[in-house]
Image 1 (tube, helix red, strand yellow):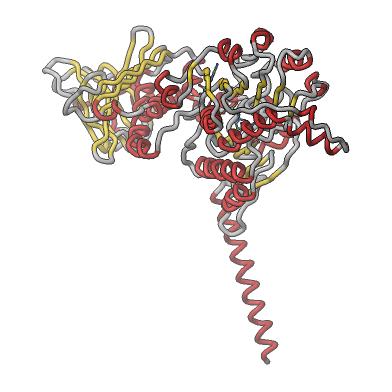
Image 2: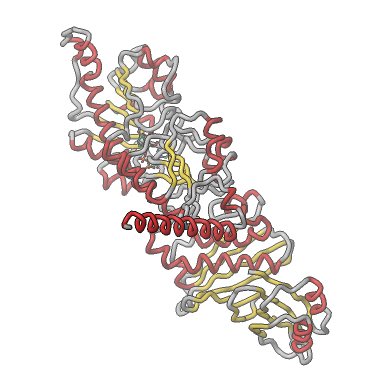
Amino acid sequence: MYVQYLFWCIAVITTTKYTCMVITVGLNILRTGGNWLKSPRPYHPFTGDIKMKILVSDPLSEEGLAMLQKHFDVDVITGLSESELSAKIVNYDALVIRSGTQVTRKVIESTSNLKIIGRAGVGIDNVDVEAATEKGIIVTNAPEGNMLSAAEHTIAMMMSLARNIPQANASMKAGKWERKNFMGVEVNGKVLGVIGLGRIGTEVARRAQGLNMTIMGYDPYISKEKAQELGIKLATVKEIAENADFITVHTPLTKETRNILDTEEFNVMKKTARVINCARGGIISEEALAEALKSGRITGAALDVFINEPPKDSPLLECDNLIMTPHLGASTEEAQVNVAITIAEEVTSVLNGGTAKNAINIPSVKPEVMRVLAPYINLAETMADVCAQLLGTSYERVEISYYGEIAEKDIRPVTVAALKGMLQNALGSSVNYVNAPALAKSRKIEVIESKSETSGERPSEIQIKLNNNGESVSVTGTMIGDEARITGIDGERVDIIPSGYMIVAKHINRPNVIGPCCMVLGKNNINISGMQVGRAAIGGVTIMTLNVDSEVSPAILEEMRGVDGILTAKLVKL
Ligand SMILES: NC(=O)C1=CN([C@@H]2O[C@H](COP(=O)(O)OP(=O)(O)OC[C@H]3O[C@@H](n4cnc5c(N)ncnc54)[C@H](O)[C@@H]3O)[C@@H](O)[C@H]2O)C=CC1
Ligand SMILES: O=C(O)C(=O)COP(=O)(O)O
């Protein structure tokens, strides 16, 4: 009896479960128009939600992986070649890398869903940021998580150079006891030249000051006051080369910094000089360095980074007075947890429709500023969209003016949003917040941004003006509470809530114009949900805006334009 009852219960539960599954699968197919079945992505069997996919192509700490795995489908596949990565990347929404993955244009062009490339570390020289920007992919990094580790590694390299620790260790392991071969120097009282006084450079300088060293620094982008505050004497690269006992580089690798220490600089260095590169391979010319080390022009060098990693057939490998580590600057437990957590947060935020705090190719502002800007971002995008639809042609110049309180803020994201709104009519969904400025530039659209903060009582207002060949349209807008309002078109005061379908018609302010216009809509069964008429002197030109509940065909618009007194009638769709 009990056994029968048990079987009956199991049968009911199983049948209910499968019935539910069949219903949810059916609903999901209906909801997604069949795409759900075709999707190559994993899905939740009951909710039908497609999980976003993340490819992690370099080693990432467990802490970061666990955060990503909570919300996404994560694959960790390291050691991929360019063509393997290009083939794999197609269905992924995010790519997480360190310095081991080369994200080339070919890789980026192979993507179709990728929204973000997260670099769990500082250097993004292994990412073709331009290609990513063109494709609208956010590139973000973790600029602070590994800086102390990189600074400590630099100090470790300096002390190893001063006391020949790696060479002495190797000698002992070879069974020798060579005390006189490894005579060292003190760093106390010596001069350290630091090229690049950013996050890591200043941390190195601070630590070296603790060792009683004098710091000379070169960084064209920091002020004298800042250097003074840090206790660093600013100097040229040549002065550093001539005077420093130890020289360390902490810049990114750019056109300007490539070979910043070359034969010319080695030729003026002290014979006892020792140089260190824990930043990027190529900042110090490897060829010139190998020559200076072999010829005894300088005493020693320590490299953590190389032009090719690992370096193959490099003359450097033959230099006994060179210490090398295999790009270990950020390889500490602490740094790896820090950068992985930062990148997991960035990726999670972007894939959930949020922002990336450290985005390289999109303006990022502090969260508290973002809270103030957010409504204006939407407003500017909508206004620029309206403006572009009203102009109806291409445009050669856009003027974006900010008035009142908003003008005191960092309005870069608002301008980007305006550019996106302006371009999306022509370019559709291929334009986004990342690539809008680059697309405007490539289409040779001049962007003029201006701010007037001195407007006293004036509330925050934005004006967007598009110009083409002497023709122009301007739209002014503001926020009233939480509501976006268009407050002016071509200098006429209006008060429109921008949404749905709107007809904007210029007309002569006299009787028997507005009525016949509304008749045209009425007889075509188009409901008017809102209406605004500008105030101009009788007989003057003014603007009428009509919010309508449905699409208005070109033929109906043409009929409106035929009404006596109507000068233009344009449909705006939002
Ligand atoms: N070996 C490793 O594992 C690690 C290496 N790094 C590398 O260290 C380097 C520095 O990183 P951070 O300090 O975080 O960067 P940062 O951006 O904070 O500082 C870079 C500094 O270089 C300066 N600079 C730029 N162009 C210059 C030029 N032509 N001459 C002199 N200075 C110039 C900038 O003004 C800035 O102050 C980067 O190349 C980064 O990739 C970072 C972390 C770990
Ligand atoms: O953060 C950087 O720039 C680094 O060079 C660290 O590289 P890694 O993440 O250890 O491959």
